[in-house]
Image (cartoon, rainbow, N blue to C red):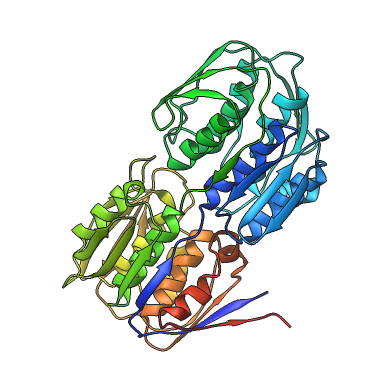
Length: 420
């Protein structure tokens, strides 16, 4: 499989354009199953996860047309079960469950996979669907749901690590075609959930409260086609902001949504990074000596778990002791050992990583274990002395559109080594 070879030590300078958000586009693509009319989705990132979702929709019977970054999906006649092998490989595929149940009143979906970053059960998804009236059987690797009628009700979706993003998406997508009113308490507040709600409303749904912990959904009889532009990827924007700080460069990040990144921007400024807002753009550079910070990942609008690994890489360069605490996923420290190969001094104590920073990192071969860990290793390689080879980068291609090309345009000495 492909790897990235990075020759570090070069400050990054220039402009980068942020792609559409992976975590927004997948549930939006799934929601096109709710109507037999065509839906047009713009600003779709070129990612392997998106291609997987396109194939899943096709396996369900939908027609998918791609022109540049625009997807047109029409689900005239669909079936309630898709390709087992496709669905099980990607966790995001679970978001087809709610739309299929709402449209067909039955669905059969294989238990999904994804990155190994800790247990991510779908019990809250199933709890919400049961509350709407679904009968559910889980066996032989499949989730089978059936509901002759979906009835609006009150649903509490809070979990051990906070609200569930995909669970909120699934229940919301099912409730839009339920009878009566559904109220979701402890709903996820992430911008990606709001983006899905905006798309569903454009299709004729009646959703109020998106972006807050309480969603009120008044069911309608049917939905129609719609056009929608996906929000920018706040995690990609944060990754490039950290790249500027780590390489002591200056990057202008275009097409971002700074209002979706307040927690990240706040921590970067606390760490001594200069972040200037210019409309929908951010100009990021190191403002002086880096300062150690303590970070705790939390549900939105807290510091995102998807930026934890990248922030840890920055703290490896920062003199002093930083403490990074992971409150969302219990196994999201797989990058620690690989950063150690580059010379980082990090120890794990329960849910926290203690980073003793300030040492120069040195290039070495490293192995990517998940999507955001991959990004952290690339950032560390950009700042390290010598050459770093990041192996198993298929994770990166799942969530970052042409990241090696974008970095190269900023001056990085980076090349993709393709599998022969």
